Image (cartoon, rainbow, N blue to C red; front, side, top):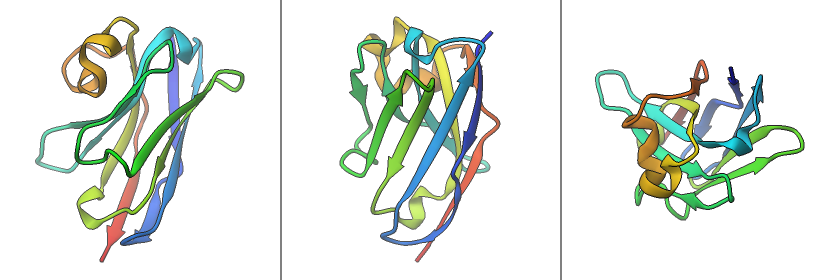
Length: 129
């Protein structure tokens, strides 16, 4: 059973960058639809990035052009580079893995609409203006 652990959250100012990491164990990320979602208390979860088994990526408009997902299969680690952050990006960020076939069909929407294979514990990102 794959397990995920995130790191890299923190507090930054508007316009700054952060990079989140997600280390996998017990399974290979490249065999899953992997990605990130975020959640603000009392709000719906929001999928923000996906990367599929053949490295195809997808993003919603809210982060497209600012966030970049990548994966290092040798280290079994996934990253989320977040640039030009703004206060609306403040949330708990989770990495997640789902059955591989969902990336092609749902992309970033996978992680809020299907049962997950695994989810990390979350890392907090706070952006102040």
